[in-house]
Length: 201
Image 1 (cartoon, rainbow, N blue to C red):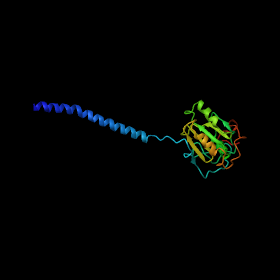
Image 2 (cartoon, one colour):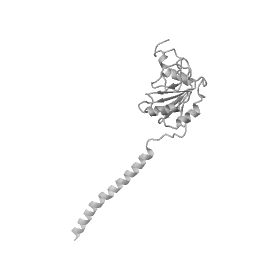
Image 3 (cartoon, helix red, strand yellow):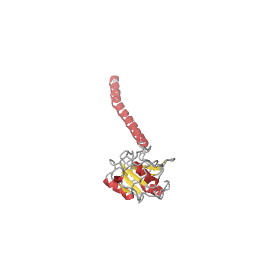
Image 4 (cartoon, helix red, strand yellow):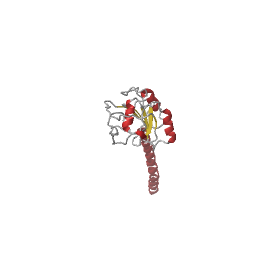
């Protein structure tokens, strides 16, 4: 009789212990999942302009015609630039940085996008939001899908539908951060009319 009772206890333990351990694992898994979702990648707050980066002390000398220049930001937010600025508008190819920086000096809004992350419909949505004193162009090397820039201010965006585009234009579109805020990008040159980089006029 004692042997039978011992056998029942052993069998019961063999059945119950794995079940109890399995329950503990599921609880631990649930706790882990909830911890991961709480500490996962942060979603940017698109309701305000708190993420705008500010840059001070930007130089603004004219470079020789056709000269190249290395900028610490990508896209650049200001600095020394070409003597000719680009005409406002929508460009389907990257534009020369040294010329667009001159536009920024004039208070222009520059919207850039990664063409591997923004499709044609997205580009159209960006063009629809471009202010009159604005330039839209692809910029393959930037980290964010879309970036909006004025002289000394820049904001990385989640895409063409990021509501901060309108907020940024409302805050900075008048060109108040620029050295020549009322000069505009109108009257600028077409990139096809510029001399190749590294040459002189």
